[in-house]
Length: 468
Image (tube, rainbow, N blue to C red; front, side, top):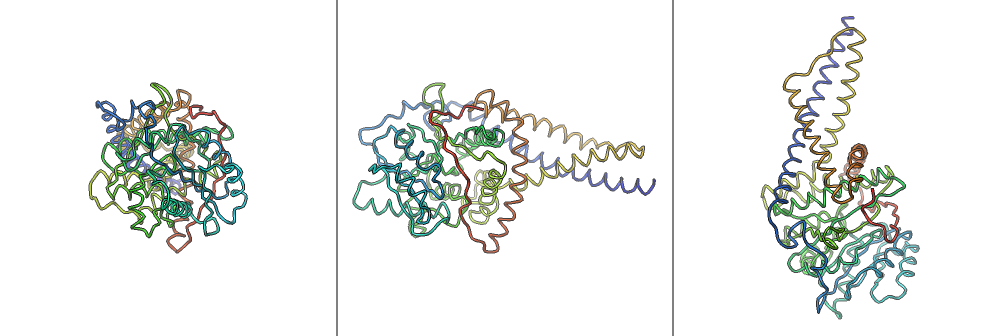
């Protein structure tokens, strides 16, 4: 029995150290999250004015002016024949703004998408279908650069463009968004609308966890970044960029403002524009007092495999390759460093999470083994107990904040659903981290960057983002 006792003692040491590592990691992350929440709550209590506030602005404050600026909407499409037609028709029928052009980027070897887009456009003068020079898939940024060049050619003889708006093929646009962009571009170089994912009935927990994450990201995290004066990363949809600001970036990149070598060109674009002096704003505008937000609605992946692929691309582009590509900012201020650290903590957070699950299983196994050989299980130290208690309180706070942010966007049912969906989010994050590391290593070895396709579905007209 002595031999088994020694083995068990060694096992207990491993479990104890794994628990300590996970507990310390959770403590640091929890304090980091609590600091962001504190800034957000203080910000929410301070008297604020105008659109710079996160609350209070109404769509009626953004009427169409006498001379509305021309706005170009860019939609990059690869293998999107299932949704691009519905998106074009819905967009043309929805916008209540008189002066815009819809640029749809397609590939010469994607005939199905070309045909679907052409059929939906039905010779509408507001639509330009731009067939790129390269066969697909390349990257979304490469397709957007084709649209940029088409815009530049049209500008030579036509009306100058005030702003470029980015959307995806599966997006359900809001009727008033161009009015908001027209009024704010000029005061700001970049305007981001909230993104509100829809709960897909085919996979409520997987698709629903995006609701929770975007509710916090676009209801709190971007508000905090703006309050701190840090650069505003873009979501790639529902965002407008001043034509002058994008042109300045294009001049530095050989007339290709979107980086074709990036997996997350939208995220990087906002940071680069910030470094060039462009001010960004998250425009949280309500249709009417107490009403829904002017926001972008879309279905996100509803099965774990697709969600893992998407999250792995985001993790690779932002937390791993983004570290190499974007660095820590030449501004050298603590606010920007703090926000970029938060952007890149996902892989480390997953490592801590995996360690915690292993430690939890280890403690269970240890209790069973000690009972089997008739020895009392070792008790955690007083310091470990204190850390675990603090982490318990921080976890309760985190769940409460997640529920509050989701509830503010999706109602009380969404708030309740956000708690079990956290487990789904954790599983997807762990699987995505493994895939992201493999992909990142492949990129370091010279692997090509290409568009990793996610199958999309277009929402039913009239559906909102408040169903949980």
